[in-house]
Length: 537
Image (tube, rainbow, N blue to C red; front, side):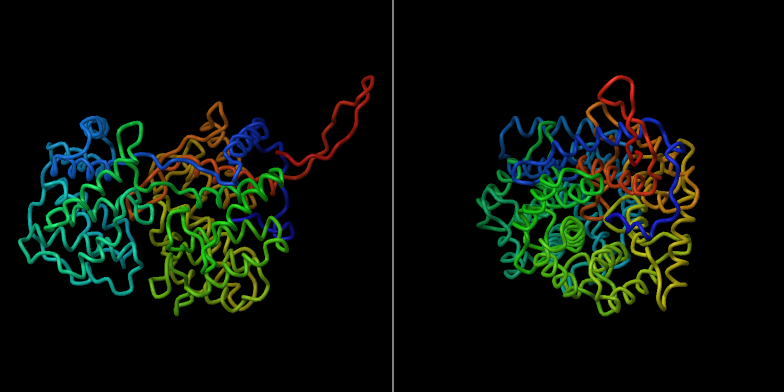
């Protein structure tokens, strides 16, 4: 995601082609994000409440008759406010949790919509998961038969394995099957520690409690788990998907701040924080509280540390690259999590961008580019990733193709051109971009698109996208947008700071492309003037 080397940039654009407010707007956003860097180098923002976890927690409170009355009332209030949500899943879940379910047709529509927005390899598990969600809310309608691989934990990373076992237990109980087996109970209870949400994931935590709620002798475990979940109730009465995404925010904000020329003292503070959080295997996770490393966070941390000071951070970068290469698939691609799990387009693009920080991984990069090209769909897009915006994978894949040379140059050039063509055809009348074709514009999708537009010959689309982004800026410098990240796929969750980071990163890519101009700075005496070189914006 880092800025390309100057020698790989197309000819520069004149600053006169862009909104006059660009420089000031970028400065306000930079100041806002710098203000979010803590004394310890962490860049934190809370994960906002979500209907899904709020509904699951309310169902547990009502089922067990436990939990503070005030906490329950606040959850009900939160869900009432989301009962008319434009999001089909949120509306159906909120209504069901409040005892006003919209019936089987709505749930069937939700199911089909969800399965259509996930990678093919997760389809059977997601179908079972949606049925389990409504079952947990007391609205099971039919005991459908599920494909055996819906509950097969072989080849799954730990989070998915625990989730699959919990779903199997919930649906099995609803269908009147045998109680949860001893091994499954052992796995599920291993995630429970009073006061601690396993891997920071409240969705899995609550699913496990629902799976254990009828297991004899585990009443105290469930009660303690519910109390732990309620420790994370937000001011609006809802519960979030995860406790936090602080490591992901820190790495992403660090890269964005570096692209904007932030003070090096602040950047090194962020870097020291990331080095401190690096796992023993060399990787990073999305939160300080998780042990499972992921490709997303690891690759961005690599890019940030390398760009900041390749010599000073050589050791952590080398360890991280070893961790990244260790999970590489036999198909040349890279998965989100551990070795042996399916390779994905977005993570493969991320890995290419990280591997390019070094000069000796050409064979890995070539194989990864072939995998990425094979993943590209006829319209130029890629299979669903970890963002509800298709533009997230597109911008990372586009950067992975720059520069393109060697034996695969023609294939990579074609992939890059198809990405650019799709993005240029998808711009809305207001200058922004939506998450999917025909969707209304939002800031974070537009930021993703701007990174691609900054590499094109014509500045007009980039200028229009910039104007849209500046119109979404609040007085404090932050940027308004919609939820974007997904977890579990395809359920969106919201950490607003990520929009700020990606917007600043996009404006950094844009600034890198704009021609330096001579401006006149007032002199110290009389009315004389001194020429000074400035890069606009």
